[in-house]
Amino acid sequence: MRTIMVMFDTLTRKYLPNYGNEEIYAPNFKRLQENCMKFNNFYSGSLPCMPARRELHTGKYNFLHRGWGPLEPFDRSSFEILSKNGIYTHLITDHSHYWEDGGATYHNRYSSWEGFRGQEGDRYVARDAGAKLPEYSHPLNKQGISVVQHYRNRTRQQTQEQMSSVRTFEAGLEFLGEHKDLDNWFVQIEAFDPHEPFYVPQKFRQMYGLPEEETLFWPRYGALPEEYKNDMELCRKEYSALISMCDESLGKVLDFMDENDMWKDTALIVNTDHGFLLGEHEYLGKNFPPCYDELVHLPFFLHIPKLAEGGECDALCSTVDIAPTLLDLFGCETSLLGETDGKSIKAVLEKTENAKEHVLFGMHGSFTCWTDGRHVYMKAEEEGKTTCEYTMMPTNIRGFFSEEQLRKAEIVNPGRYSNDIPVMKMPSVSMSLACKFGDQLFDLEKDPDQESNLVHSVDCTSFNEKLCEALQEAGAPEEEFERLGIK
Image 1 (cartoon, rainbow, N blue to C red):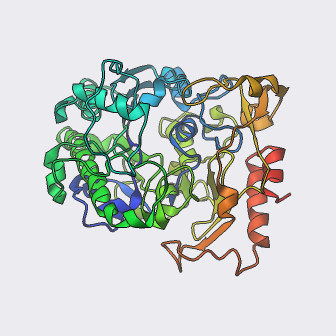
Image 2 (spheres, one colour; image 1 turned 120 degrees about the vertical axis):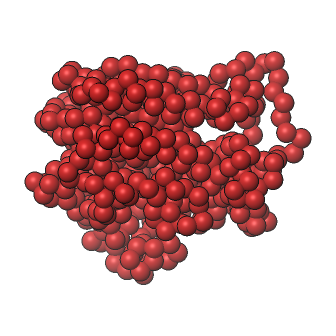
C-alpha cells in the first residue's frame, strides 16, 4: 500500500464546486470525484491549526484538555507507528507553525521531512532592515509584527514558482517520481494555502476581475462592522483566487497519478483542518465566534483502491478518524494508538464498523460542541468559569507558559488522554467570548445556513445529556463539565 495525503489549511467547504459553489474556478477539486469518494458529513475536531494536527497523529480530541501546543511525549503518533512498522513516512510542508514553540515536535515523528519557509508571519527574512508596506491598508486588515514580517518574506516570493506552497507541491511531485515504483510509503503534501493572507499572483486574481492592488487580503479576526459589509465581495474573491492557485497545484498530483496508473494501488486523502468566515454571521476569521458550519463542516475526499473510487458518503466522520484510518490502510492494528476518539473510515466503508452517531468539536476553553449530523449544539462556558491545560510541554504558539501558570502547576493523571501517564495541570489563559454569545442550537436540515438559534425555543435537556455522555466517553476533565454547567 502507498498513500498520499494532500492537506490544505483553511479550506472552506462552501467555496468548492464539489459542494455547490460553481462560481469558484477549481476544476481539479471537481475532478477528484472521478476517483475519490466525497464525504458530506465530515467535521473538524479541535480548532485551530496545531490542535487539528495533533488529532491527525493521535486520533484523540485535543481541545478538551489542551490549547495550542506541540505533540506531547505521552502521545502515540500514527506516523511514528507507521515508521516503526516498516512504512516510510515523509512530510513536505510550508506550514511554519511546525517550527514554532507550539508545534516543534510534530515533523520529527515522520521518517523524514522537508519544509519551505516564508508563509504568513513566519519569522524568516530579517525584518529589522525594513519592509516596504503598502501606502494604503484596509481598516479591517491585520496589523503588527506579523504583517511587517510577511512583507519581508514576500521579497523572496516574487513569482508563483517562488511561492512556498507551490514549492511544496513541486517537492511532492519529486517524491512521487522517486517512489512510484516502490511500496509501503506515505507522503503528506501539506500547503498552508489558502490560509490568509490571500497573497496570490495576478493571473489568478484576473479570473475574478480583481485589481492588481490588494484589498482586504489579510482580514483580522473579529466582528464585521456594518460599514464594511460591501467590501466582503472583494475579500471573498481574493480568497477564491488563492483556492484557484491551490487547485492548479492539486491538479499536478492528480495528473501524476493518472500518468503513472497509481489509482489501482495508491490511496489518496484530500483534507483540511478548518474553514474560515468571510462575513458570514457578520464575522471575519475564526477562534472567537461560535463554531459555525463554515468553520467546522469540512470538505473531505478519499480514494481507496477497490473500496472508495467515487460516489458520496453520508457517514458522520471527523479529523480524529484519520489516524486510525491510516493505520488500517497499512494493515497496522489501530489499537497501537491506544484508546482513541476516532475509528477507521475504511472499516466503516467495509461495514466491519458502525458509523459514528455523533462527533465533538470545539476550541479549548471556548465552545464545546456536539453534532449528530443534523443538529448542532454549541455549549458556552458559564460566566467566570475557566479550564486547565494538561501538558508536559508548556508552550504556546510562540513562547512559554507564564510564570504564574507554572507556579500553579500540579501533577495529575488525566487517564486515557495521556495514556495514564502523569502530566502537569495548570490554569489556562482564556480569550473565550463564548459566554457572551451564549449557547447555540441549530437544525441543519431546516436551517443549513444556521440563521435561527433554537436554544430559547426548545427544551435543550436532551442535548445537554447527549453532550455530557459524549464528553464522558472522551474522558473530558472534571472542570470541563463544571465550566459548561452540565454535570
